[in-house]
Image 1: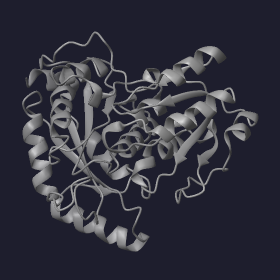
Image 2: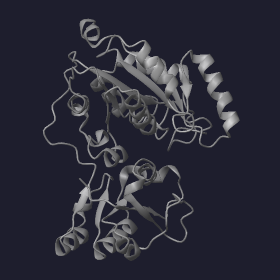
Image 3: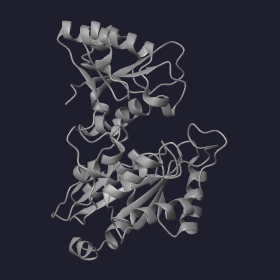
Image 4: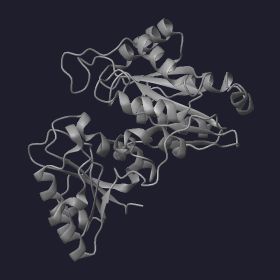
Length: 344
């Protein structure tokens, strides 16, 4: 486990989506976050106290979390310098980037000298197997998306909490750096060698016979040319009984791909259902989650109603309006675990 409390890093990020890891921790583990570190020209904030490295250490922070994500997961020079400053004040450093903290000689040396640790969250297990796709017991829900960073993790966590509030056993299965930091474990699926993606998810959410649910955090999008491979492996490995489609209205283009429009919701959902049927022939869609954070409440409500009417599925913003409608659909029409196995 990464030692808490945390100092959340924003650096100089001007991209609201680029600080999603720090934001996710601030939302879902607020009790473990003492403040945020940002440079003077950073326009972003999480609404936490702005602290220097020394102030954060004095306030009890034990780990600086480099909770930003740029293209390719690069560990920029400035991040290395700021990480070194955190180590100098006595804090550990955690990051979920593709480039590893431990591979930076200056950081590795400083951490050793001070008896501190570097946590590279995007390290997949070394003993993964290829996926088999054989039927396995248990109930599993997977969130899928029209694009990257549309709220799949938020929806999955909200659904997990909602089921628990109903007295249903439910476990969040993290597949990305933010989810892993929140949950304390998981598999960073976009760092897994392609042949082992589906197998990694089979191990992350193995067979269970307690009638509980595994809620698996989706990654990327089948509609995104850069990341569809990860999304497909997740669909096959999850062997989901249920899918929830996530979308952010108003996006001008696919993330990182100007000029490429987002897919139609119905078409995107159908593609995901068809792909999931390879390992889960009776998969079903149970709802739509829209990230309406950039919209006014009334406009958001109207859009939710229109989307629900168009697709014939419960539609909500899981943060603004809760997930009750989707959970109602999930539970009222859920076949038994035994019938799911028999159907294979």
